[in-house]
Image 1 (cartoon, rainbow, N blue to C red):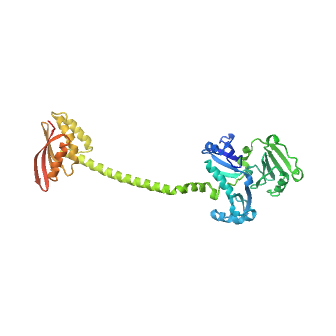
Image 2: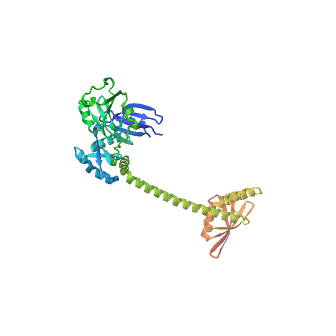
Image 3: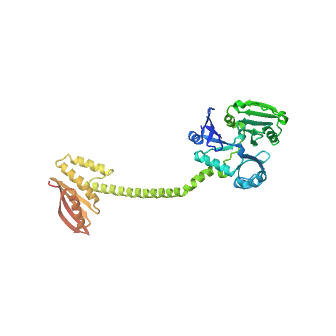
Length: 404
């Protein structure tokens, strides 16, 4: 099973991060280092990046149940009045539609999202999820959750409402935020991760009327990586989805891949043609060897493996007197006869170191050529007779070992 990895930025650039690895056996390890190190250490793991909440704007839109491209085209018109800047400058990611039919969203500057994607690409990291760190806080109805850290605070007010707040002037900002909470708020849960500076805030006014649940924590990542904290909105949608990013990597290589596919297809075609040619040639040679065997041993009836049967016959002949010369002459002359097109062996006789062949050939030049080829194999060749008949030549050759 996969490990689950949660990454949180330490600096603005995102090059230095803290990451938590959670194993299927509930083992937890937290480290800090460069983003490239995380990419190397988390090969094959399921990676979630907790994006800074200060760059994200939670929104809600009321739209009919549209899907796919129709929904994406309608979103800008539904939320443009909720944004301070031109809606075209924002990347919009949608969550799960609520029971009231409304659609939760997260908006982030398109340029900012592109910078994060570039940072991931440079580190060779391909996260599965990019979510708001504030929406990873635990929350339950009737409660507001506040995380205090040395450089700021995160507050979660509802299922999809969560923000980043500065520590300076936190109390009035928090009182304003309570007005956006989902339902009536009766409790404020404070999680303090400021280390030695941790102390329960001495709040007055409206905040003092709430039930305070204060606790100190050492590692916020352990809290933010808890899957029980509720629904998340994955910002890797549309043009920033994993599928689209893979498409961007693939598109420059499509022409090369097409050429490679065409080359492989050509090679496979040539290999098939060569295979068919070799199979045909093998069959032709097999038939030639079988015919030579039948011509050499006219009495043979069952020819299963002519080469093996020829070798067996030759071994039998080696047992007789002069068999050694016969075997040697046959071994040298047989390939030449097999390669001579149009040559038919009609009879052969062996006597006192001389092999006499009766042949049928196409013409006299073919007989002369056969003689030269046999002499080229180191044999003494004599044409004893040559007669033309029915547009063919019948000849008788005498073969001896050279110098024999």
